[in-house]
Every structure is written in structure tokens, then in C-alpha cells.
Length: 210
Image (cartoon, rainbow, N blue to C red; front, side):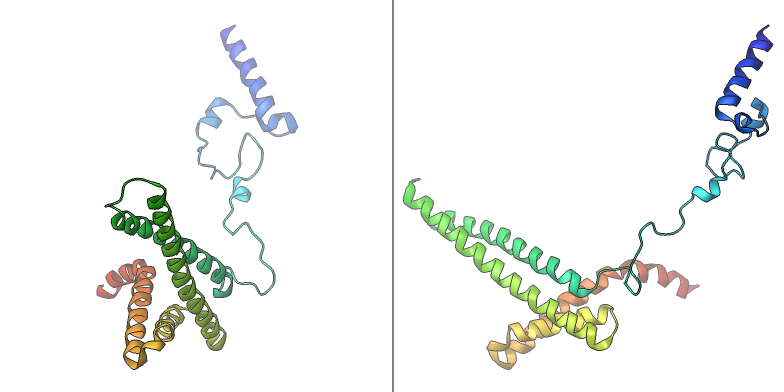
């Protein structure tokens, strides 16, 4: 009786989840015990569907004809400029708060002191936001121009754009200021390019040693 009850339960489950309900062959517990649960079996006895068709080896989004898979410098320029402006405003506000508290430490907590601290915060926030926003604008403009001129997007564009940005930003300081600005831009963008390619360089060194 127990065996009959087990068989009836097995046949009921097989008719519910197996392929027997749709005209396919039935599967016993011994057959189902050897089916791996990784989804890589040749044929799923539960769904009667080849799991290989469910594996997505390709990207799941569609790009227009001729479009790049990554955003170019022109698309990233808006994010770069906006991010630098907000970063400069936040840093300037904190710096203004520090300077305001330092300059008014001899004053008692009162309305004039609060107004002076608030003025320092807004002044420093606007100054740093304007500075970083201008640098980001120059860097993005040079990057887009160099990319369109060369017809390629690589780290050379980053280093060249950073160097030219530093040179132009410090151009009011004469030749010495231009040289200092160019060196500063070259060093910063060079470190950024090195950081982006660090994993690739680290993986390529063992291969060359072998």
C-alpha cells in the first residue's frame, strides 16, 4: 500500500511538473536524482526546455547602428562639469566654515558672528565651485577637440587634455606659470591614466616574465 501511495504521489508530481502531462516521457526519482541543479543539463525534465537557450551570453541592451558601447567625452562632459561644481561647492563650504570659525573665535555667539560665518561659507563655496567648474570645462573641451581630431579615444587624449588645461589656466602667470600649470596637469592626468590601467598592467607583467 505504501509503495502504491508513493507511486501515485510520484506520478502526480510527475504529471504536474514533468513532461508527462504534455505527452512526454515520465521520469522516476532515480532519473531525477542525477539531474544537476546548475541549469546546464541537456534537457530539463521539469520544464521540457533546453536550459542552454536561457543562458544570456550577450549583452541585453540594443544599441543604434554605429553607436559606441561606451559614452564618449562629449556625453561625459556634462557629468564632469556638474560633478566638479558640486564638489567644489561642498569643499568650499567646509573651508569657509573653518575659516569663519577661526576668524570669529574671539567673538561671542551672536547674530553678527553667524552672518560673518555664513558670508565666508558662501564666498568660499562659490569660489571653489567656479574654479573646479572652469577647470572641468576646459578639460572637457580640450578632450572633445582632441578626440575628434585624432579619431580615437585613449589615455593619450586624457593626458593631452589635462596638460593643455593646466597651461591655459595658468597662462596669465607668464611662461613660468604656463610651465607649472602644464606640469601639474600632466602629473594629475598621468596618475589618473595609470590608475585606470593598473589592473591591465599588473596582469600583463607576469605574462611577459613567462
